[in-house]
Length: 333
Image 1 (cartoon, rainbow, N blue to C red):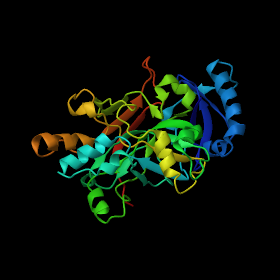
Image 2: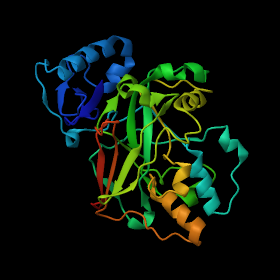
Image 3: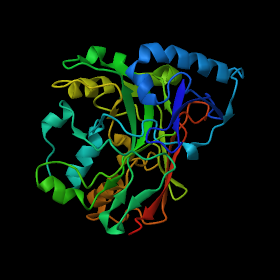
Image 4: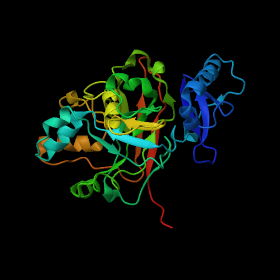
């Protein structure tokens, strides 16, 4: 099934079931008012939501209405945890090569994960707001999973049993703020503003055989100002599957229901030689330019730019709906 949180003036929105073709939706408030409520007792609420989903897809739901992604908050507008990985190690390696720095061998067998801000996510069609273009505004196309309660010490072999939903991510980055932050040795903060997610989150069964081995084996279409800049495959070159990322998160702590785990920027090795595969963030393009020519020539996003991130199934149908956002200047009060 496919689930969304619709804007209603509240912090957490109104839970809705969305049809498989993303054409219609039905409010689910009589079952669970919010997605977090459903996740808190998934075994009780999920069968009821699935029944409503079946009725909607069969044209038997009582009160369907047209689905509009612009009415969506993030599926979880705020979450107990947002832990983003860097499972596509090719991306990390390119960044290091562009700086003439060696990549530690450990990066190939010990996942990189940072803890992002989870109190204020933004919807799939909401503006990306920044105070200055000089901050180096970048998009990052990713996949993420939402968990139910995952216990401390969870083994990778059992981790995927706790994945309840899958969605797309635009992990907005302010590249020119990041170097000074990392130089302090304490990680990201200002360089990682509010993250945005796809209109709907879907249960793994909706993905068919594209969901296997803890990876989503479909290309991610990334368009910048109407031109496609990348279509890397999210199942290719993902060194650490979500099973390994979840186990890494749970090594020393519980991950409570509603925790979101991200894959990191999708990056395919073949893109280094095949421009048709492209990139899912500007920083990677700039790294390739630096490696080839000694300096980058592609600039970061400017006010008025648009970014669209979408994934389609084998028949060309949108799976999650599109993240479609405009970059705007912060309005000073």
